[in-house]
Length: 95
Length: 243
Image (cartoon, each protein chain N blue to C red):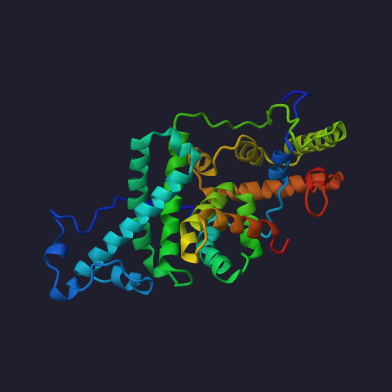
């Protein structure tokens, strides 16, 4: 790394993300199916812990998006709409 | 979930044409329904014996194949593996997920549909297998000093914005060096700067996704405290990347 290099905004945001309240990857896995059904079926946003985790763990987030896309048709939604609803819920709900 | 490896054991289809004793000795009552179970009956049928269970397990395996195929199809890194390897991963992940679901039936509380609950096992197994396959021949960098290209990104539209982000970036770089433990530094640089998938790093370091995520969580808190003490953090995050 030289004097002329700089971390991008995106990288800085990833490094300094607030991932409180704490939730483990295991607990995220346990909760994500219930949370998605509550979101799509009743418009209940995920709890703060799950939102923080999905913002902070790229792999759990990607898997949650995949599950959302897979169950979308049960709620008469396109997969892309389900994924968008999830992402809006984790980035805005309760923020 | 962090014990993914312990869930992956050999799957053997229970209604194989050649050697399944359950299928040969089923009773007449067991033949009543070869269709996929309604959602409320999955656990009952998977917990049964004989042909009822065998048929249900077959349907479960089909569900897991569908979910694993869905997951593999979504992952850009899977595209580079070739069709044969992708198919292999789909079947392997479906087998492992079937075993995982069967071994955890007692933990299913009915708080979601059974199919939604089961799908996540296939997505997990397929995701892990694709990431590991994609990185199989790649070196995982574990550095203590971030090395990144010039970050004058498109969002920095003015020289002033560039200077502000540059000052923040220098503070972040200083914080990485001063506020983090060597372990936190290596993990944060690998996952958050070099974008090594957390599963891949966990495998190389013989640890779990959960343990590495905890390291990221703790490191982020330390870095935020370091930046906050120096006036770079607002309540929402770094002042210069808030907008």
